[in-house]
Length: 376
Image (cartoon, rainbow, N blue to C red):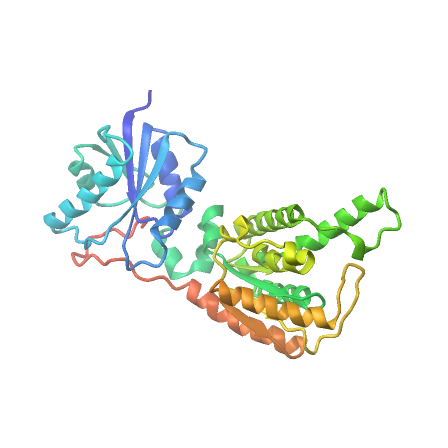
């Protein structure tokens, strides 16, 4: 048995940092059971559900840790007892959704930890109060997301990554523009050097499928490959897996040459009337900042050995992409002109989106001036 039966960690986790995870692990090492309560105000930028999901992902391997979230729009004022009562009532309600077991230890890195613990009749256990083990705070990350990127766990990085996706018909420059876009941001250096590019798995799968079929039919032409719905399910799943893995490992920007949503359009291209609507993998996608649609006009057709089609089908597919994105309510930007013009527009758009993604609404202020800036 550990030193405490039921430990408690309270925080905004706005966003969760490695400092928060250090606090949670230190607490879990001393408690048989640990409840982590994430409290988020409506004025804050990162949704409560996202913060809870990121915390759960990082601590999924520890069965003693339970993460629960609750909305908290009460004011912050450490000098007002009625505010304390309002805040603690929310904390107790959140804990009660998990267990009725009394809290006997409150773990914090905050100056107000003793006061908080007293409201639960519990012992306060300070953890890394001087921020020596992990010198970071949520405040610092919100002030400079790029500088604090290395202090975020993989799930949080993936959730905060600005994802831009290049889509378009064959031979319209999606691969060229997406690679150039990723290279542009890698050139910024620092954390941006880790900017990831995710290629089109459908091309890899086409090669695999074609070679497999030609093992028994050596003369099989690419045009004669028979496609099924299961093929597109496999492509979409692997495309999403690669994308999410890259987001966990990369910079605040991820550049993708197509994605699972675009696979629905390719399914229409190859299955025609047999194509489906409402595929399950189109409803579980991570949030995208924008789709760049590469226009077919002004781009010559180049057959690289894995392409099928002509100018007419390219024109149709441009329309299919823009209609599908519009119907889904996604943000999309049409890229036209030369390669340089297309890249320039993509960069201008991405710069705006990155600036927006790195801007966080301020948390509810504490007018008493006594709030420790700590891990929050």
